[in-house]
Every structure is written in structure tokens, then in C-alpha cells.
Image 1 (cartoon, one colour):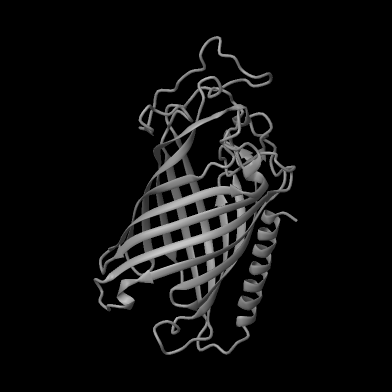
Image 2: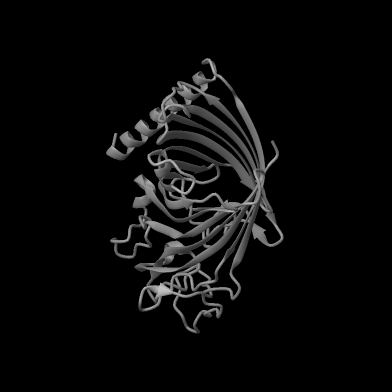
Length: 354
């Protein structure tokens, strides 16, 4: 067994232990069990770009002038080539319903233990071309730390010119509806700190959050190292493990604009998926590339039941060599260097039913 396999086995065992503790906590004496149901919608506009044609200074502004496939461009056999950019970008829309059950467990009278709990959440997601359900359990044994494990199951279809799910064998994902299911299993931990816990005051809520998560994704129709599309994305997903990070530095205020913050997200394949075509390999397209997304966010709390989060993000992308960038199939491209561009403007609205 390799070191990676040993680590992944340890992750699976840790997830099983957390889930066992969380389920067992339901049967412990509890002062109060809290139920909460929310409805919500997420919308995002993705800025158009040139899909790997970085500028000389490593930063690319949004570009709405597509770069056509040059005449006489040499392409690999079976690759139809591609234009860079589409001239308008893209949009995303998703709705959800979420129900959570919070059970106080192992609580104490001190500030570090009075909020100890286990929280079970169940969510259904629906978008124009995908549907999914998920369940997770979050154990908070102390105020500044929690552990999470979860599972999701989803599928998709082809409609309105968009494709929710499918194998990506040549750059154009297959458009069959309901070709299989995507499952995701994850284990994570979150460290969180609020300055007001040390210096109480309604204007003293300077907060720090750091989340680390191991996630395993699997598309039932895909073989090992075979790429696939999910949620109408670029079709560069693989069965395997990822390491995800979320880091937030924010300030909460007793106003309708109740939070402003900076958020950084990281995403990278680990294990066999990262070794498919690494950046330092001659002709590698960058399976081990670490994606970064960051930017400001603001939350507006209209009332106890209504809130809206606004997020503007930049991201890092793989830049490709001039002689491969127009290849339609991403596995035919060669990594050149990374660069930075504007990613998306996202809105998330949430309404608490009860």
C-alpha cells in the first residue's frame, strides 16, 4: 500500500468515527433540539476569458473578443480545435432546500463548551441540468473547532443546449441524459475564532476561519483517469481525491450589512489523479495544478429570515503553449505557466422558513 493509499484509508476511517460519534450523540441527553429549514437560490455570472492565453504580465482582464482558431493551425488527430472565449461569458443558477437538526451535546457553562453540539444537515439541490441530494454531520466539541463528514449523490441531463453530466473523451462531453451518478464523500475540519469571545462587544467581531477538507468524487460511468463533466463545467473532473481549503478573514457588524470579508479557496487533486499529467512533465497539461479563488464578500441581513451574500472572485488558471492552446481536448494541451484573471460575480439568497 502506497503512502497516498494509507492516507486515504486513514481519512475514510476518521470519517466513519466522526459519523459514529455524531449519530450516537442523538441518544445523549439534550436540553433542546433545534430544527431549521431554509430555502435559497444561487446565481453567478462568469466573466469571459481566453481560456489559457495569458498576458505577458500574468494577469488577464476580462476579454469579450473571441480569438478564432488560426488558419493552418496544426491539431492532433481527432481534435477539432477551438476558439478562445465566446464573447459573453456564462451564467449559473441553482436552487436548494436545506433542513438541519442541531443537538446540544457535552455542553458546559464555560465559553468554550456552552455551544457544543452535533448538527445534521440534509439538502436538495436543483439546477436547469442537474439534481443532487446531500447529507452531512458537523461535530463541535469546542467553540473554536468542528469536524465534518458528508455524502452527496447527483445526476444530470441535457437540455436547452446545456449538458449537466457526461464523459469527456475528446473535448465535447457526451450529451446523454442520466448516464450515471456522481457521488462525493468528504471529511473536513474548521478552526474559527471571534475576537468578541475574548473582548466582548457588538463591534468587536473580527473573525478568522480556516477549513481543510478531503473530498473523494466518483462518476459511475467513468473509468480510472477518464475525465468527465459535472454541473455543466469544463469537463476536467476525475474519479479520485481532492484537497480543498477555505480561509476567511472578516468583520461582523450590528448593521444590515452585517459582514464584510476576504475569502480564499484552494482546490487540488491528490494521489493518482494529480499524477495523470503533472506540470513538470514534458507535455503535461497540469493535473497537479493548485487552483486559487479569492476576493471580497459581503453579507446583507435584511431580517432574521432573509439574507443575501455577494461575492466577487479572481482565480488562477493554467496557461498553455501557443502550439497547443487551440486544442479542443484539454488533455492535448501542454502547460506553460499560471496566470490570474477575474472569475465570477456570485449572489446567494437565503430564506429561513422556520
